[in-house]
Image (cartoon, rainbow, N blue to C red; front, side):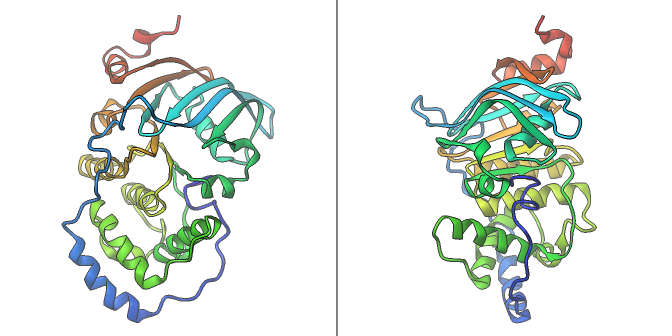
Length: 304
C-alpha cells in the first residue's frame, strides 16, 4: 500500500473487537481451504498483452530530492505501465530503484521537483498517500513495519473497509471476511493462526513477505509495486509468493517489481525489464535483458 504497504496508508483506530465465537467457528472452516489456490485470470505469468491495453501508469521526466538534504536522487524517470503488464526494474544499489517506488506512493522523506505521474487518468502527485492507496496503488516494502497490539485480521479488515468506503461500497462484516480470506491464505500456504498474530510482530523475513502479499491479495490493487519481494525468502517461500502473485494477475491490473535477481523473473515473467542507473531508466528490453545481466553483469549492458 502507499507509504509502507497497508501499514501507513491509514491511521489505525479503535474498532469493534472480533468475537471469539467467530474465530473458533471460522478457523476450522478456513482449514478446508488448505488445498485451494487463487484463480489465475490472466492465463499466464508475464501479463496479458492484446495490443489494446489501457495505460495504467505514465511517468514522465520525474525528478525528486531528499526533502531534508535537498539531494536529487531521481533525474528524470520515464515509464509507462499498461494494464496486464509485469514490469521489472533492476539496477545497482543506489541507482534510485527504491526511491522511485517510494516517490510513487508518496513517502514523506522525498519531494518531487519535476515531471508528472498519471495513474488511472489522474494526477497521482496531487494525492495524499492514503488517497493513492484508495485509488488502487499498493506497495510491498523491503522491510515491513511491525504494528504491536493490532492483529492481522483486524488490520486487514480495517484496510479493506477503508477502501470500500472510499469507493462507495458497504463494509464487509468479520464473518464474511473470514471466508474471503480462506483461499488467499491457502494460496500462500499460511496457517490461519497468522490472522490472530500482531501485524509482522515477531515474524521472520519470509513470513513478513508472505503477509505483504496476503495484504495485496485482500486489497486487489490495480498496481502492485513489489520492492525486493524475493529478499529473505528461501526456495519454497519464493515459489509460494511468486505463485500467489501470478494468481493475482488479471487483464486490468499490473505489477512493478524491483529486484536484483534473475531467479524471481523466472517465476514471475516480466513483460518488460528496465535497467536503472543514476536516478533514471537507461535501458529497456524483454526478459532476455535480465539474463544478459545475470551472465555478464552491468558492464554487459552499459548505457555507454
